Length: 72
Ligand SMILES: [Zn+2]
Image (cartoon, rainbow, N blue to C red; front, side, top):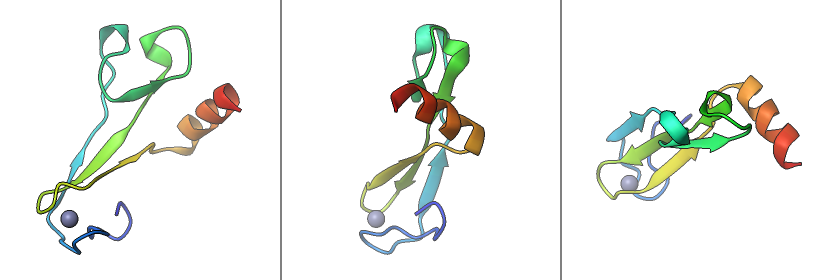
C-alpha cells in the first residue's frame, strides 16, 4: 500500500498518508522503545478513503533497529 499507492482491498488509489506523532506521555500513534516519549518511534498510517482499510508503517531503518533491539 505504501509502495504501490493502491489499496490492496478495493484497488482504489484514493489514499492518504497520516504521519505518526509523539506527544507528551507518549500519546499519539507510536511505539515506545524507551522510558521517555523522546525514544518513541512514530508509526505512519496509510488509509484508503474509499473502503476505510488502513495499514501502518514504521518509516526509517534506524527506528526499525530500535524496535528490534527492544522486542527481540
Ligand atoms: Zn480501499
